[in-house]
Length: 126
Image 1: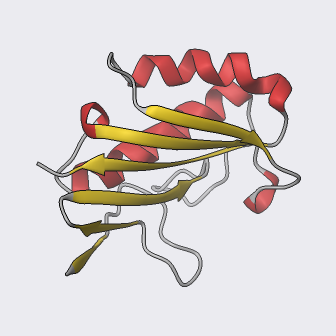
Image 2: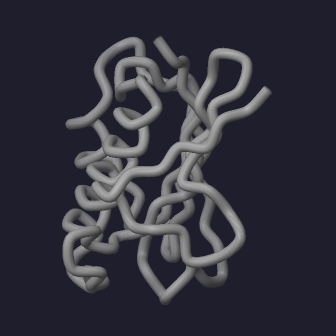
Image 3: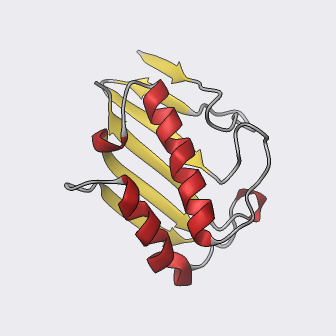
């Protein structure tokens, strides 16, 4: 059995997908990009600004599912430019305490709306 996660505190899905799905004690969070959920405006700022907004959006989805950053077991980070890795990583470290989740970070040719970063996560649900 699976349950859809939906919150106004994160950007609405812009296609045939859910913000998250809860199944078998986990929440599978769709990739978040730096859109302000209150205004719908895209943040075109620095990699640090974009990463911070992405992680805030991800946190809202986690919370709506009954989870939190502390419950994340795996993240995937998609970067437009791997040269932004260290600066993204500095912001990322503000959100996750030890033991940090498993993670992959990959450079991709293009991201939705030409953003610099997208992050998805899998977490335990309390």
